[in-house]
Figure 1 (spheres, rainbow over the protein chains, first blue to last red):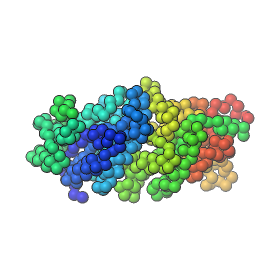
Figure 2: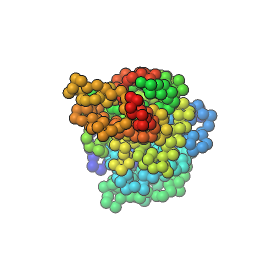
Figure 3: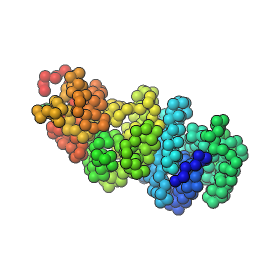
Figure 4: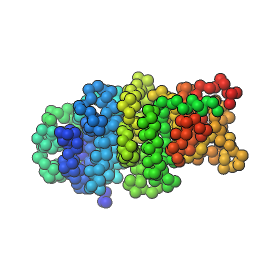
Amino acid sequence: MEKSKRQFRIVVRIEMATLINRDGKINRKKMDRLAMVLSNLNNSGKQIMVVSSGAIVLGSEKLNLSSIPGSKLDMQATAAVGQVELIRSYQRFFDEYGQIVAQVLVTSDIVEYPSRIENTRNTFDMLLSMNIIPIVNENDPVSTTDIELDDNYPLALKVANIARADFIVIKSATNGYYCIVQGNGKPAVEVENEITLQEKIEELCKGITPARLDSSGIVFPVSMEEICPR
Amino acid sequence: MEFRKILRNKKRIVVKIGTSTLSFENGRINFHRLEKLADVLSTLRKKGIQVVLVTSGAIGVGAARIGMTQKPRELNLKQALAAIGQAELMKMYQKFFEEHNQLVAQVLLTKDVVTIHRRNQHARRTLDRLLDMGIIPIINENDTIATYEIEFGDNDSLSAIVATLIEADLLVILSDIDGLYSADPRMETSAEIIHSVFEITPELEQLASGAGSSFSTGGMVTKIAAAKMCMQAGLDCIITNGSEPAVIFDILEGKKVGTHFVAGQQHIINHA
């Protein structure tokens, strides 16, 4: 495969709850579509990173719990069970498109240690240079901070900044639209579906340089919720 | 051999399996062995024994997944392969354990999470809860984000730290060597396996570090260090050949297999 020096980097934030049916099972059609779109974006020369929640939701299903656990401890245990399911699901669906994925679990305090940021960035760089899509989640089972169910907006921001991504893509849980947050400070753009997402990203990439090739670097907004309401 | 009897009453055990035991010499995974291991550990769990599995192998599995034939050396590449391979490895474990209706969970640790007291209680409580739920936690180092200051270095140490953290009563290290020998078995035909160790003396450590005595990647040195950590914490440790995982049944029946590092027996050395 030809290696371009100008590959743009996109963090895609997935809220697993939007891909799960009422019975707690993964919606195969939606998951397949997502895997196809992201594999396709990757094929087009964009480097894709997924930040995905869902370990607790899938763990609850695996454990036959009637509802999501309430205590932090039960959430942590459930997350340890569910993360296996989560990554297995991604593997299964991406495999259909010949796309290899990898699991990266980070602790929330990672940004406090420059050496860990550097190290994690190097791992991301290596995976992306190998055309692999990292599936990133918080290492909930050993987390010392609060676990907020399905709230990995902050993690998506951290990952985007660590990896010096150019865009963060968020799929709305309400209308299913994709919101593209731009790392260069320009206003976020909303698109209706996968096809327009692909087109819009191509358009946005024109005339700009990938962020990590700029010495200035990038800073994503502190609160994405103001830009992309859920 | 009375003290082997104490192994019959173990209720919470940690089993560590190394790369050399779960893969072939070419580095590819030995599915048959994983299948047997899952069978043995699920059976133990059904008998009411709480089991934690500490596994290596992520990097090798990752290399195989992307079709790499050479052993990676570069750190960044190893970390990337670990991220690919850990996911694959868990998929395999889950598949084999599911055949026995046994639930598993993945817990990835970095050193800061288990050695700093303020923080390690979180990991401990999660592991306790998983065990209480009848789940087998499968532990590995979180290679992908571990930097030198937070890495365990080897999974022998990791397994001993985990065993101590959760107050297990036995650590079984499955290796590609039958146990600790009185001399290098490849050099001296008179070399015999040492079945019981009551104290880790400098001579013993010397024996472990002797040329040629470390057959597996981790080597005997790190295993002895792990055993020492266990003994100091008051828990038994067995180092044995894991090519037949059913050896764990023999151990728990008090049979004389591998080298038994006996906990808290330093004061009655002469009874051996």
